[in-house]
Length: 334
Image 1 (cartoon, one colour):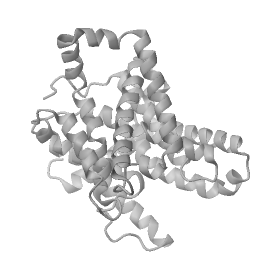
Image 2 (cartoon, rainbow, N blue to C red; image 1 turned 30 degrees about the vertical axis):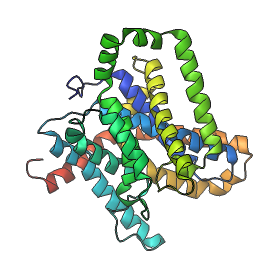
Image 3 (spheres, one colour; image 1 turned 180 degrees about the vertical axis):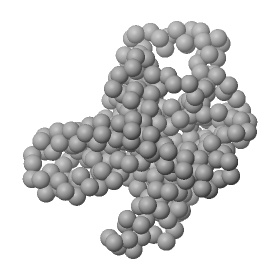
Image 4 (cartoon, rainbow, N blue to C red; image 1 turned 90 degrees about the vertical axis):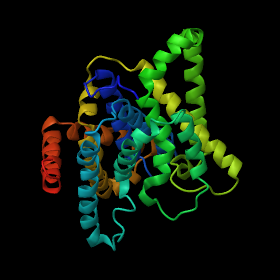
């Protein structure tokens, strides 16, 4: 059990979360366009932006008797509430799914996956090799044939090793220094660090360029050669962990603009979906009339503006109070 992780605010991890949440918004702004460079950007971002969020979530996770109710309040209540809101909003535009909680709406799958991970943590912590075990499970789950993104199970399994890497980060780091000092020293060598960064980012660029985005998202069962699919999924998971650890290694401990984004990341994550839909609806004709470079620039600018606006403390406070209100309606003494 990782007893060292606490919920104390640490600038480094707020900054990591802030970077990841911007990449989430940018990735959704860059999703499915006629411009190849923007589609490539979306595929590249997906390799590691959610890995960072799951890593940080794992780092601050705990195992104690009070956790299930806290997890329900902080994660499942927003999932339930905003699933209903999206379902209601969707009614005028077509027939919404009848299984509204079974098939996660848009980006809400992240909350459902995180809920399952945190609830399963006490059991996973009893395993002798939890990260290796969940890594193998992630590869095997691709063989299961299913329709749609049911309960976000595929991505839950695929990101579990990343989540557990965050949970055991301090423990494994201490073990490495204590029992394998030579390896630990080598990993701190500037040449090794440079080579690791080079390999990780070149590999991720190649994966984003050659592998379809639908495969990179690890959302559906294997289709085609099983060996190739297993190898690709394994590579994507490993790259997500590797790039996350590299970014964590170089992330500043100082407070900066990313810190505020990270502290208010939950409100940004959930509410940005509305802004993405509205922005795309009202700027689509203008967006597609631009050159590819201008469209790429617009994508970045709009993403920045959305994050800057939604990162305001008053928005996060209103969001948190609303979640608390609905939690109190559902739970006794919530």
